[in-house]
Length: 152
Image (cartoon, rainbow, N blue to C red; front, top):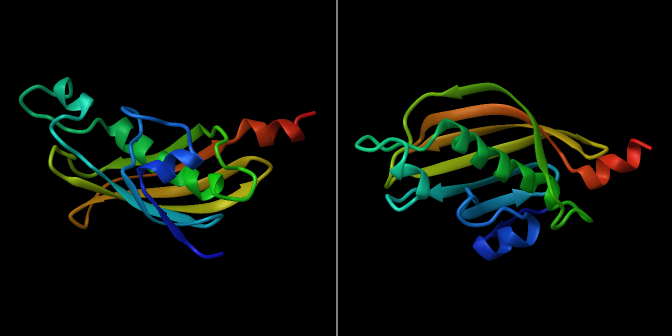
């Protein structure tokens, strides 16, 4: 399957997170059923910098992971029939945070789908700033609309 890019409006066609909780600005390439990569530009105006932490702002680690998961979800939400469905994080493992992510930086996100079966997707994500690893994780997501068909 061929890859394609998504701008802010395109992202909204496939997934339901919205400002201020959408942690993706642009998708450079999503290959449905395989991978997605893109980025989030961080500005001093992002809501979380005011409280995390005054005088030493950094993007909270769990929001970094949320950015990875949102990007990863696009690997399955772009598959035929999944557009606009809700995807939930079911599990996150092997979380690692290697550096602070600060205002003015660009969090580059790379994700890969390892398996997709019956509404459950497993994969990995990596966040980088200036080519340096900032965070990474393995996770499982679920799309309840699909999963429910197999729980009857």
